[in-house]
Amino acid sequence: MTQVLTLISNAEQAAITDEIKDKYAKLLKASHTSWLNNNIALDIFFNNEAEVGLLDMLKKENFDFAIQDPITRRKMLLLADMDSTIIQVECIDELADFLGIRNEVSHITEAAMRGEIDFKGALKERVSLLAGLKVSDLETVFKERVTLTPGAVTLVKTMNANGANTVLVSGGFTYFTGRVSELTGFKVNRANVLLHENGELTGKVGEPIVDSDTKINTLKEFKEKDNLEDFETMAVGDGANDIPMLQGAGLGVGYRPFPVTAKAADVVINHADLTALLYLQGYAISDFVDA
Image (cartoon, rainbow, N blue to C red):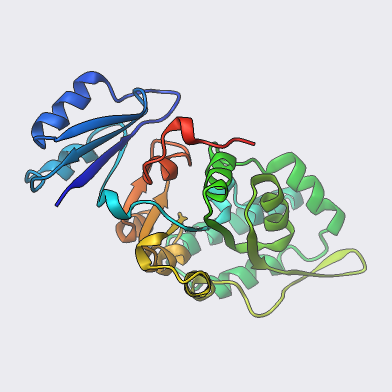
């Protein structure tokens, strides 16, 4: 059976040289190779069983990789986490920092993302500390502190342009997922609702809470809605609450993930930006849609 090894480098530190290409092509007795982006992303097609120790070799390299069936690599559904995945920050930590209580909140966030404490309880505890924050301050935090992860817009718009459904599902807050969706092009977004009265946060979050169950159920919902096979679905995230979603997708991608999430993911991206998810599907840079 033909397989494809995809090598993906950080775009600003091109690491896939001709020497690297020749090294792995020879090792795999490749039938052919194809550049998706010169020195940034490469497909190596091979028909033999991968050599023992190949994965250990690849893990020591300064680029990302995946081995897939080339026939089933293109996806028609993308489900994505938001905080520390599509955007580069944890919104709840930034809200806490705005109030001067980052240290009281960020360690809880870290523990929840590592899977050490219950997500729902951790969310309620952190939101309670935000009581009194003005709703108008949310916009200030969004404008001044929320930045998209490189490649996010290209990822979403390229998949949209090729007929895929794109869904942003977050344990964060609708105030931010709605705005991030507008910037990136996600067709659907789901998250938690910060309750407020008289222009200030009450310190409570609306029910039901969006958690790991919500994420996997959202994946199942849209897979069934579009009558998709498992292999046509992709999910990406970084934290423990993303694990069921990653395991339920045809391809589960850990993006700069916590260790527990990395173990559960099919592919781990530690070097490249989010366009790696396009290269994984066989898109070349000439296929990318940026606007």
